Length: 311
Figure 1 (tube, rainbow, N blue to C red):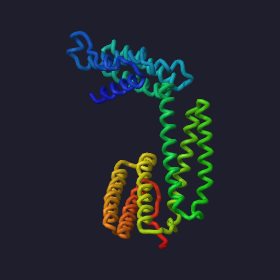
Figure 2: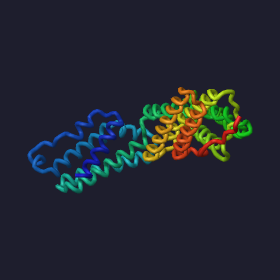
Figure 3: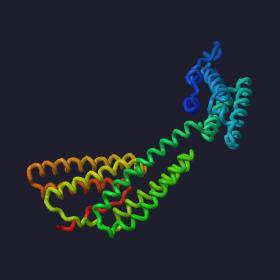
Figure 4: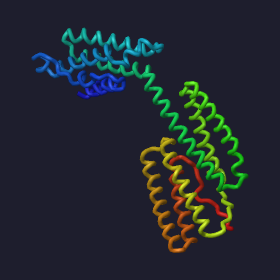
């Protein structure tokens, strides 16, 4: 029965998320008596009656609700209890299908109510994990910003300097909030800082074609520069895919461009090993153009190819 399996899954989710041990016992306990063993519908009803009763009486997630200040959660729990009581009445009257329908709705109310009053320790752990992930993403984007800035004329990076200052200030505020025990506020600040970092990178990579006006003393130096540039773009891609909510099929295409870039980079290194540095530079630039395509489909706007000023 489809609705039965869905309800059991919801109930087990409540128990497992709350840390309650008897989920398996509640979900799989077989009803007693010849009547229930001979009547699958009655067996399902008896199993659900025990399951909902167990949740209402013993689930830590449910037990948190009366101690909370969440009026909506308390109402949902009261509704679940009322539905269970009605289901018992229907069951005693021999109306199994009506009782099962009421129990299914009771389960949904329990799940909904429990979600409104999350476990404090679990929530704190999630906030800390989010804090760590945001800081790592911001640091990585800052490093990439520095790398890009070092390759661009000063006149094209001055506009981003103010954004970088704002980001530093917001991270300091986040540090203060976290030190004061307010991880949620810290994460709000970090999330806003992260958005600014992404926006800043987009502004640097779009609007105008990036002009690399560096002069190289040798083809080897130019190749090293292009290799470093290629790796910087590649480092950005997994972060962009993870943080910009890229669709799975788009992520697959982005990864295909990354693999093509790596193949070209290997070819460039082989050309360099053979002493053909000019060809190697051209090949690695082609490799980087694949990474730029990957970033574009991930949501980071970059130019098709840079304009290089010849030395």
